[in-house]
Length: 233
Image 1 (cartoon, helix red, strand yellow):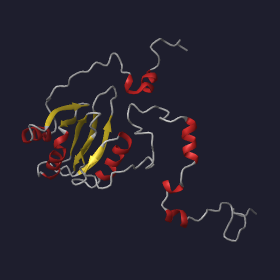
Image 2 (cartoon, helix red, strand yellow):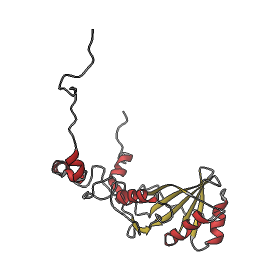
Image 3 (cartoon, rainbow, N blue to C red):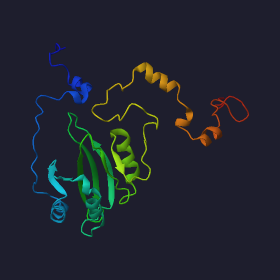
Image 4 (tube, rainbow, N blue to C red):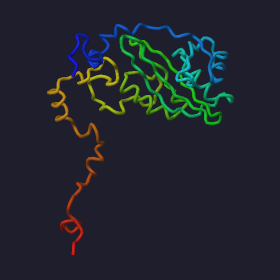
């Protein structure tokens, strides 16, 4: 086994959260425009010159467009409705937190079934302004996807019809687990986490009707109370 170095393990940087950044990770400015493979990128730039910030091509053929978050509904509705675009399937809404004080990215993965084209749209949000308009009025399927981003990253989606946690309990008090500044072991001590787990109200996870109607499952006995199992000759 190699002796430990003074620089420590890469996992130390993860555990340190946003307070420490890699010394070698200097910020590199991406070009504002590169030749796209998807014609939707060119169409977006021509129709919304003030709304498109830059574009990139990842992995050789994956077109990514960075847009101004203030115009997210306008641009995405056009991509959905325009006959030459018709991005009728919202495959995913997610987010990326790079840490180090960098803006958080909200990511929309779009797919046009009629035109058989994929497009990734990103909006950058400052850490002190994590709010963006909901796109549930364009794709109904954005409902639960935006709730997940709200729950795990802390992004507020203005105009969402039911913005509340979807994975963590409503009374979860430790923050947003997928943020880079979230400690690996959580914000509370193990003792406090255990105490909270043991004192949880079942109604935090079940509605009263589910609790009252629940029938205990009996294992190892049949309806007459005999031991279960097949007879063996």
